[in-house]
Image (cartoon, helix red, strand yellow):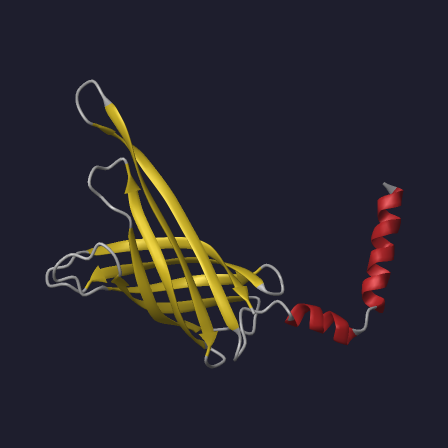
Length: 182
């Protein structure tokens, strides 16, 4: 126990001896973003359920989703982004995987800190398996992003998306992922 106290005291002396500028630099490296930086985002989800197909048999059905986007900090707070998302179902009959393109923007409220709330808007359009009259989807979300390293952060977001087709349906969405800053 005494050894731990001595080591702890030694570390405290080293940290206090570190120049104030070096400590400030280490803290300032962990930011969400800065003007002119590029940000790459990744997220994925797999879910499933067991469905009763008859009185004596069941079937497993699954859904998968993945997305990436590349964003550019056009200003200190605003990120313009584009990317792709893919989704599909496993063991659900005629459902085919689809690929969509995304274009959107994100506004960070405190990008120079280690954590920031943000709002985001995306227009998504199917590139494969389009149905007649499909004009895309719009999604709005709010999220929290926190820096875990000097160029890596995690995010949690939730939002509402709606098909832009006449009479299109809406869906509540949530996601978790990570972003890398270059």
